[in-house]
Amino acid sequence: MISDMQKTLNEVLEREVKEGRVYGVSAMVLHKGKEIYQYAYGNADEENHIPMKRDTIIRLYSMTKPITAVAVMILAERGLFDLRDSVSRYLPMFANPTYFDKDGQEQKPWREITIWDLLNMTSGIPYPDNSHESGRRMGEVFGRLIERRKNGEWVDTMEYMEEIAKVPLCFQPGDKWMYGLSADVLGALVEKVSGMRYGEFLKKEIFEPLDMKDTAFFVPEEKKERFAQIYLFNQELGRVAPANWSHLGEYYGEDVAFESGGAGLVSTLEDYSHFATMMIQKGVYNGKRIIGSRTVEFMTRDCLLDYQKSEYYNWESLAGYGYGCLMRVLKDSGQEAVSGNAGSFGWDGWTGNFVLMDPVDELVVLYFIQRGDTGTLPVIRKVRMVVGAALDDMQ
Image (tube, rainbow, N blue to C red; front, side, top):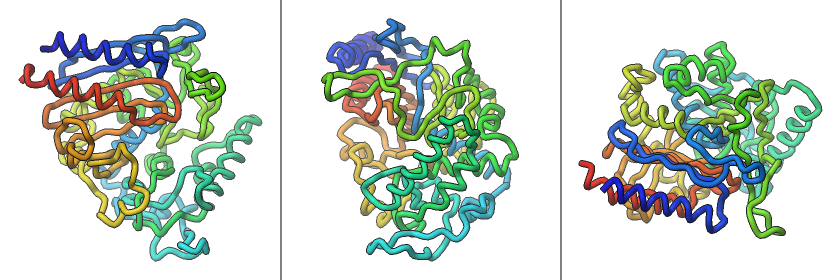
């Protein structure tokens, strides 16, 4: 029964706060376009006693990526590029890349990065990461860019691309999957091809049609009382504590210059539910078509070849999943260790946010927190098991 599900989910969410893993949490479940659960518990800002609510504005971090994938597909549907095109055709700074071979020597790859590589994280462009030379150099690049912004310089998306493109790739394009800055490059691609700032393109083509009023790359002054505090676990204190550090220099002021297609958006539970509903309804929301139904079906398939999953595709949250168009796609729920339907898709974010979209059961599950360095938490599997058990009574 729905009432049993609601009671159990409330208890699951409350336990996360009471046991000290987070200060505030919210969640929503939609089934066949109807909201069947929504709950918020604890504080969005513990120090100022501001409660977590349905309209609390949170940092999406990597849950920005599925939105970027849709933006790319909107332009692809208009025939403005071929997904197999070299990125350098539109962003010339990515011409003539180099990569590090297995001996750490800089080499010329057999081909350039394509848009398809970016969509599937097979570009070889890393995030800052001290575990390998390419990532270390990317960290140096971001350190310089962030310092320039802090000093008052206007460092926009295209200037970020100029610097990112100078870093040798981790491997030849197409050889492997590696999570990195591919979606940020796609945001710049949309900006270049559309002739609009990326945020303006998203507003016109996605946010306004989907009535996503609180989703953007910045938080206006009049909404800042709804902007959640971000937390990290503090080893010295032995608990989560406020964090002013951001790993990619995220900045949410109205004068934001770099609009990160991989991690830069803020949103609310309400807003993101509209985007997820559109995806479940094969591109349509409230009678407005955003992208074609066949495009949604295309986006939600495993696009990786087996050999591309050989080295870096080893996250626990990817067990049982394929990957494509900046999202994981469930292939085997037995490997995932939670009940679910093959074909379910979605992603999560660095602060623990999570979305699951299941076209078989027409189900959307959203879970929002603001605790950094988390990704997909065990509580997500608990929530999904509770919801899955209740579906039999809703058929």
